[in-house]
Amino acid sequence: MSDANIIRPAVPNDAEALCGIYNHHVRHTIVTFEEDPIDRDEMARRLDTVRDAGLPWQILETADGVTGYAYADRWKRRAAYRHSVETTIYLAPAAMGRGLGTRLYGDLLTRLQALPIHAVMGGIALPNPASIALHERCGFKKVAHFEQVGRKFGTWIDVGYWQRLFQPGE
Image 1: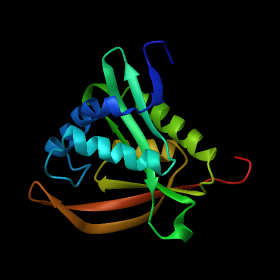
Image 2: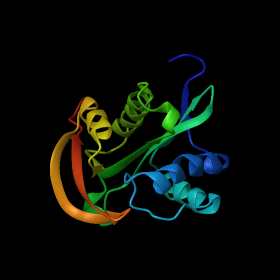
Image 3: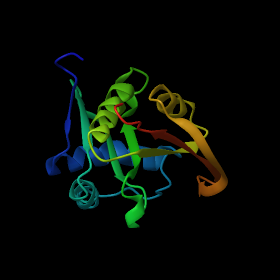
Image 4: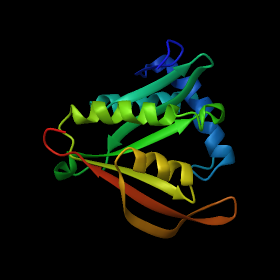
């Protein structure tokens, strides 16, 4: 990675830039089922929730500023799920298709391997060939497909789940 591209932990001051990336997807894509843009305070609250759980939230900075982020959050709230997480990644449109998502997601997965995490899930609104390719490049395999579970922009949307299990010593 060149000096112009760095991956670092998110800090509260990143909330505004994170909103810019996320709200683009809220307004223009099906990759999030959220329908209304969120504000800086809500993004900061979400960041705090992830950090308070001891999980990573990573930022991708390029010469253009913050251009992507990836994080892990608890999969479910019950105690026996404590070794499982769900991951999320968003890139600014200008950052897509340049291999930056693979670098960012790889960094997140490396950080998760250092924690007592065994199962990593990624939910993908379908169709989304780019996200499917990213997950499979990063060692995930498809484990579930739910039909018509969301509705956005007047269209029913399927969701698939991809999973990666960390093996001892990996």
